[in-house]
Image (cartoon, rainbow over all chains, first blue to last red; front, top):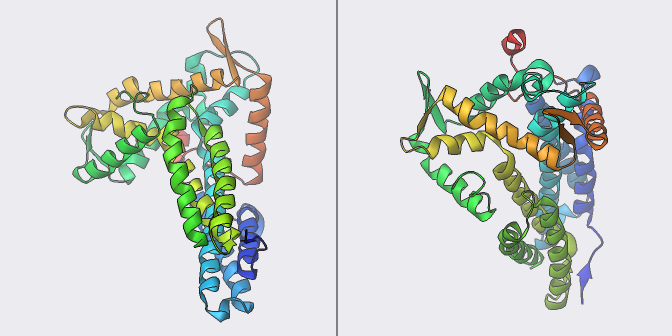
Length: 181
Length: 170
């Protein structure tokens, strides 16, 4: 059995860069470096993490060997940082824009029991589910998967293949029956 | 070869996931998928170390976990995304079209109510005498979410396209 478990300099640098992703997000969330737009904040944090990694890697000697091991480690390092960034994105989206999380926060602001309609109206601290609907509709229209004509939403012709792929994914994850097919 | 070991391990996970999704009774199988991913990772690493002359663990693990994170992201999107559910509501109509108000009244409100059912089933809220009340577990989770929103300054990011006029209307 030959298992190399000690990380190379390139891979170790990717751990540092991965840990820096939430720290960069945090640093850009307040103070003089504040970036208000969450999307831009996340993109910038990811870019900064990659810059940090590239800086460490280029200053070291492993990369300059330019052999198969170095290239394999560069690929592995990049995948490690991308995994960390994607995990951070999942957490940020869940906390910032998750429907269940926002519903829970809205409910927690009530001291006593609430009726369904009050709860839905209070979604997102008073945004309400109708605003949520418009928001998600904008998101859908923004992908150009659907277009709106007068008051009707029409599936865009270009969306047929993505929809088919999504149907396959729904079948793969066994969600087809939950969404009515 | 190390990258190939990671790829083969992921292929094994990709075969196992639909089986897990069909065996699990609960709607959300994410915890089981992560557990399966860990088991396959350990098994794949041991098998790789036995079969390959020299297995670089981090190269193998990086590829495997990157693909696994994408798989989990895809699972979450299929399970939770309101936009995807809305897209299906449109595409599954015979005419591939739906009135905006119908989409909201018939489909969207049901999608949101499904989330409420999930919160109740998950022990975060209770339904008592026609009204909803938060549980202690729900209150703890809400406090954690609020803390994270404060730390990352996410107070104004509840919506993807939060607009000033929307807040004004509310």
